[in-house]
Image 1 (cartoon, one colour):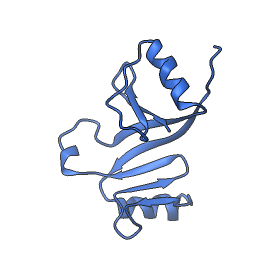
Image 2 (image 1 turned 135 degrees about the vertical axis):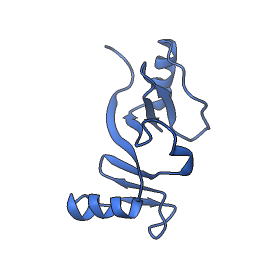
Image 3 (image 1 turned 45 degrees about the vertical axis):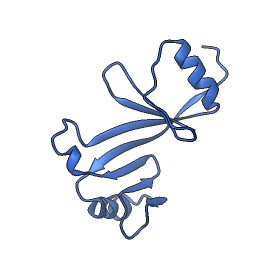
Length: 116
């Protein structure tokens, strides 16, 4: 396939019941480096390890089937070219805010992310 952009896997996002317990597991048991915590390290709602993003489960997630899996993220070399090309192929992106990642769904409804 000849195109002006390339696609590489970036991370998988997983919703967790207890983010502090999960941080300890991924950091202390698996030995992964905690790279980022949002909004801060003391009370995070999201954290990033290499290839994995953990998201604190919320009350809204409680009744949602498949609540543990959030999305798969890809990094592209040229986001705007990728978006134009994928839209030309019939892909519909979810509502997008300027400067934020682009989200869309695969045929089975799995949420995919293109990082800016």
